[in-house]
Amino acid sequence: MARESYEILVIDDGSTDGTDRIAKKYPVEYYFQANQGAASARNLGARYARGKIILFTDADCEVTANWIEEMVIPFGDPEVIGVKGFYRTSQRELIARFVQKEYEAKSRYLLKSKYIDFVDTYSAAYRKDVFLKAGGFDTQFRTASAEDCDLSYQLSIQGYKMVANPHAVVFHMHPDSLRSYCKTKFRNAFWRVRTYRKNRQKIIKDCHTPVVLKLQMFLLFLIGVLSGLHVFTRTHLPITLTAAILFIGSTIPFAFRTVFSDWQVALFSPLLAIFRTTAYLCGLSTNVLLIVIRRFCDALGSVQVSLKQDQNN
Image 1 (cartoon, rainbow, N blue to C red):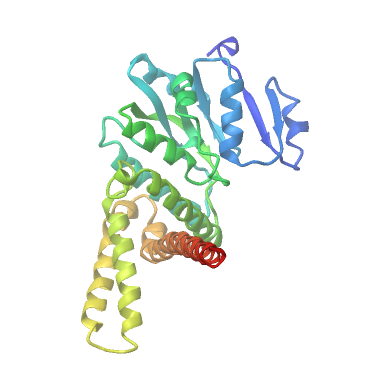
Image 2: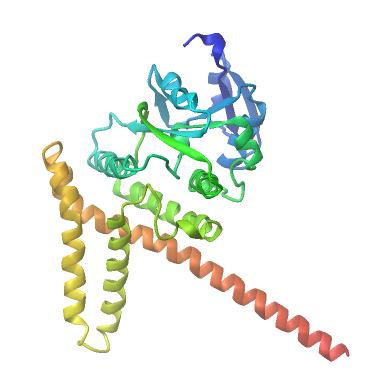
């Protein structure tokens, strides 16, 4: 694609790593803002963009040579307002390879849908007018987590059509250690609570999350609850063991599909699934607990105000 047919905008969200110095060496438009979060930075870029189609990618991504061309092809259909690309990685760490295989499994599930409800910003494109009309990304998401999921959920609910293009590829830097992987899953789950509160229709089913992942969360939650009750009574032990067997069984299809391309990932995938599900449950639970505490404090404050008013009367 000719350079004159597109523009590149770099939005610096308050970095201190020399991004400004590096960016200014290249033919890009550079903008700086005090740190306000990824959602705010992306919205700023969208407002400055002059084209009718806006593409997003992230700082830890490297686009392939034909990425722009592939991302804009689906917009030949005037009904399409959003496009999701795919990613790969060249990393060789076990955790990073597991993340890639995990992503590929989700992608296979997603490609079963003609129109999708999940466009993530490492490789995303929107019609600018629709993006701005929708208000862009919710800046209440202070960290890069689920603001992209939230927007695509909203657009899907409003009836807009989005598609996936597996030929639009970027290379991504996945978490490469168990700690960073679990931290990422915790953060994503923590912020996903806000997404689900705003888009309740997507709690049960979306086109990106295989049902088996939600089943694993339910089974691990059940195991945790029953294990706690086991302190007081042993009657739940058979149910606990059954849930544990079902959980391990649910990881077998993934391991089987992976064993021929990466036997090491396949071997460790049941254990990594336990860590993933635990981190996800912890993230969800933490946010829900904070909501409950906040509501309790608000209610307590309202009661105190009411009591003071009664005393004054």
